[in-house]
Length: 126
Image 1 (tube, helix red, strand yellow):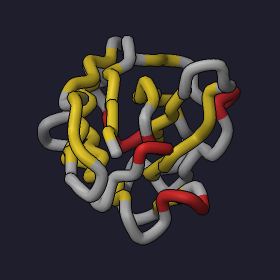
Image 2: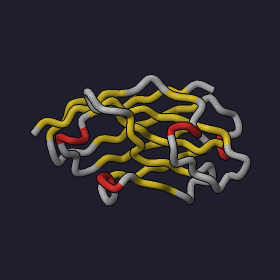
Image 3: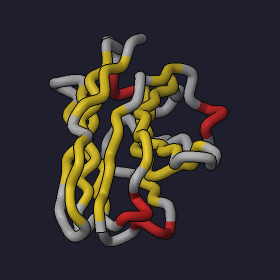
Image 4: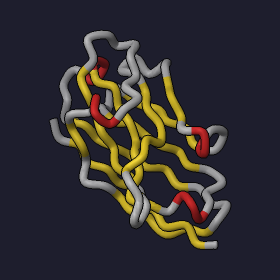
């Protein structure tokens, strides 16, 4: 499975961005998808995840109410809508996917994700 992330860029605080992650997985409904981020000098942290069915989501506390994860299984693509961006959101954002036996499982740890995209840089200036 290959993933292609896109949509990063340089924005100002308060702006919005939408990241996209295209997957080559054929049975996308059996793959949980997640977004992670890694800021300079820090470890990679989870941001948001979504079940294969699309109806179960998880958000890290600092992005709740600002970020929205979604997916379009017909297009094999997941999205991360990021609103009210803050300088502390600056990081390389990675999408990842992992197989789940049930479509209603959202993987919430990096270890559950077998496939990773190349990362897209999001820079938020103050």
